[in-house]
Image (cartoon, rainbow, N blue to C red):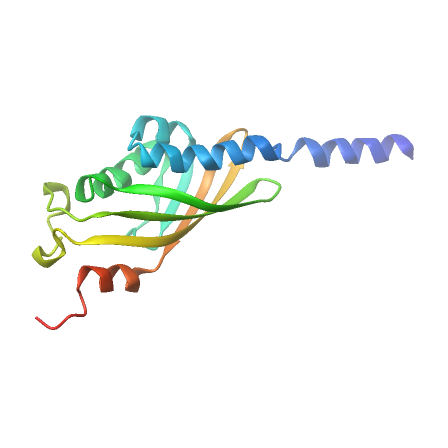
Length: 159
């Protein structure tokens, strides 16, 4: 009976990430984004990681997907920076609350940016949930207030 208890306890504790390692991954995700370091950012993700955001047309997959998505953001907002406001940790997941801010520019990568967006500064509140296994992000879902972004860009202003 005692052996069974210890076996179950071992299985439960061996399946979860140590909280300090999980927090390090969460912080590294935001820090590499602030540095616009796409190679370091990609290394945080498993090859089959599913990356989703309310700002994406479709899910991205793995390191190449995350690099492609953030290449567009960094090109259209070269001064884009991120600041963590809170991290909440669970067994194998973290929710990262943070702000992102920058100035929109016209870019060949984002040909659909309206002219009236160019030069506008914005600050957004964001939340991203990451799921981690074996030290790599395997799933990510990011949220931000798209209406707030459009308001800051002047989308609702009469022209």
